[in-house]
Image 1 (cartoon, protein in one colour):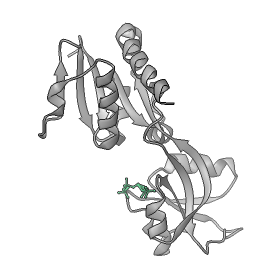
Image 2: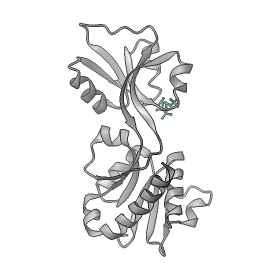
Image 3: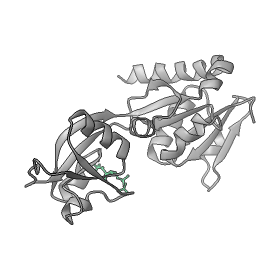
Image 4: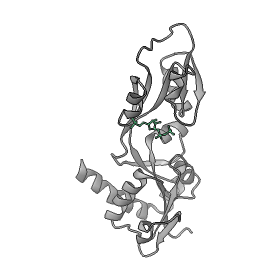
Length: 212
Ligand code: PRP
């Protein structure tokens, strides 16, 4: 499996956009464009093998060397802090990590703040920087329900269009960090396959710069 560059793509719209950039850089793989449930595709002539991976798992594949490179949201890098190289900001998949709550939310000063989130590490780091005592409620989805049902005071979550917050009568109180998709590489792969990895990075960089 090791003579090719193995690239973990996040399943979904971001992964499809990332593949389009790779294809335009010359790393096409026609089989990936055919409908079906296959997860792994290769183009031996171009020396690339792609896998569709759950977005939150991309960094695990890259950190452990099952993939040489991957495309992953900055949110995942901040949350799991994987030991990988971050090679490029792709300026796509843009959103922000924010604190949100009900419109009538008032910080219960002096009490522990209950915060629901899918991102406990980002949440812990953010509030420890503010010296605010919090209780993290770790949920896996539909985080917006938590303040509505009284499970938490606020949430820390991804805001992209703001539609989910708006439609649930919630609002942003604090912005934590802007998020976008990043190109990452395995540390050992970057030593041994640096020529191939840099060629792919430079192809993507060119297109990112053209679009800026
Ligand atoms: C994410 C996030 C918000 C929503 C924000 O959820 O957790 O709920 O998208 O997007 P918006 O600002 O454009 O409305 P996701 O779709 O991943 O589903 P989940 O609730 O199952 O995590």
